[in-house]
Length: 188
Image 1 (tube, rainbow, N blue to C red):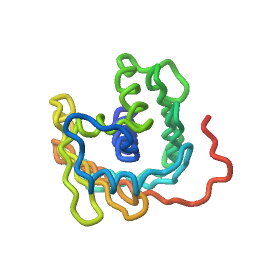
Image 2: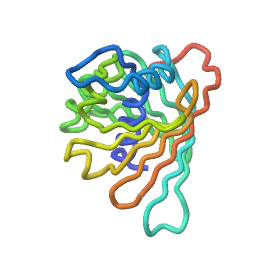
Image 3: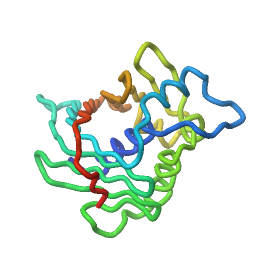
Image 4: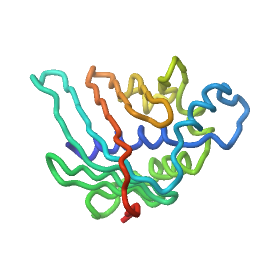
């Protein structure tokens, strides 16, 4: 799995885990705010994931698994299978496997961290939102996101259980989260 695929998936997951403590000129509907608050996890937290990525032209889906750790100042996306890879996101940028931050990644990283710190404006500014039953569908408003992402669907009751990312080229990523106990969340 390439760093860009991991990065997109991580940003989407973090956007969906954000709280909604701030209001803006056109606030999200009360039921959307309630849904997001219901799914919010106290920071820091860690969650195991399984990802199935379907790419046009490939006969089988690509499978990966690992741990997502979210803290107030950083996010760690740690893929353990089939390859051991880590992406660390801080306000200074996105660093694959502890290397130098990716060029141009600081803006994305700052947006991600702002969302994780409870800025509801980030969701409202960047996505059109639809809520149906236990799923929230986000459609990008910004042209930069529309180039890659068609829709993001987040489903779950008391926490996010599944995220599905549908890309413009027809590729799909489905990520299932498993909230098993992590003894002492390691944010390193």
